Length: 85
Image (tube, rainbow, N blue to C red; front, side):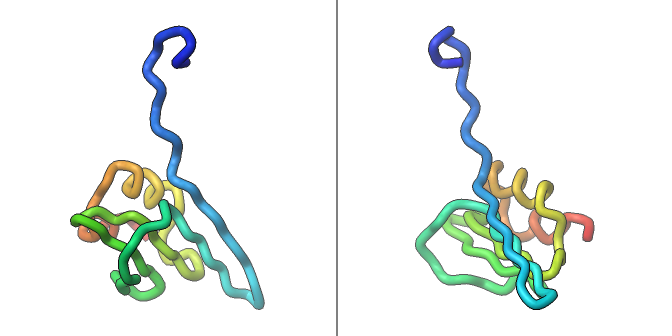
């Protein structure tokens, strides 16, 4: 896109997942300085300057794609907790 002069969209937030012994872990977002905060049962996040930078979701507590879009948009913890489960 850049070669033809069109705007280049930012890359999507990274997403990794793992399954082990019937437990599922999804991690969405960019590595960031800060401490993990528990936002809800099975949902932990790193928040920097009011924006969620990275989210760990245990056992499917939240759907990944809506969380990914919120991380990409710079949403805060309150918006993240409004994602339908």
